[in-house]
Image 1 (cartoon, helix red, strand yellow):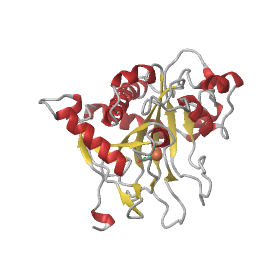
Image 2: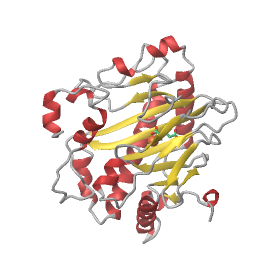
Image 3: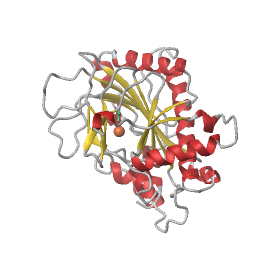
Image 4: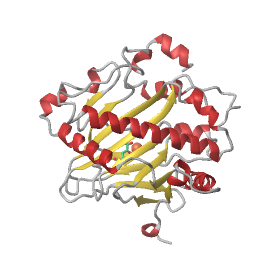
Length: 320
Ligand SMILES: O=C(O)CCC(=O)C(=O)O
Ligand SMILES: [Fe+2]
């Protein structure tokens, strides 16, 4: 089989979310387990997020990024204590990248009234747009993908034979970060220019919406040693596991490398990734006997230490 013929598994989650007959849930659990073991990625229908919410979100993302650059810069995530807000095109450069990512992004997260724990908890920044144009559809969508991320975590736990009661601790005050993205049209044949360069997601479950028809995501398949293109289909989500899941599952679930090269002809590409990491102080639910007792917070601090500063109390509390 050539790489062009290999596609990510497509899982209908409705059998888990809304089971109709005995065995429905078990079938979904097994399909998700196999997909995450083999690819670290799958696509999904029956996820329960209405099209109207998806469309509302994409419209809001478009409105946001169409604001003048000067206005967007006032919302820079680099100036925000909770790392929420706007990331300019060209601001992300990974080790070994030839050129910085061309994408621009906007981050929101939990809405907590005060800044706590070095900004892992705290308020969002919102652009000066009418609530009906931005805040309301975006927040509604955040809550819907927050829920879906939690459901995927449950399925991953069940897939390894653990009870979902472990989610009570894990999802007590979960870190759920949402990244809205716009990729400019790919610049001709500029070598080394990616929308997002090759990377693995560092955390928990990623719930990804791609604008239908705007292809560009590619997933690295280790066995074939090839990039597999992932089609951006209407009402179909992409789910993938980050490094936290790879490590905490003892490699039973994969964290796969992926990248984005906007394939849309001379058009921008919109997407939105919701990353469900878990409570800052929670430890490994995928192996409750894991002696390391590493926390979600410790992993997040490790990941962002070079980019942001964290206070000593937080570092001690999460054991980083
Ligand atoms: O936009 C996409 O399709 C993927 C984005 C991504 O991989 C990321 O933001 O981590
Ligand atoms: Fe990613």
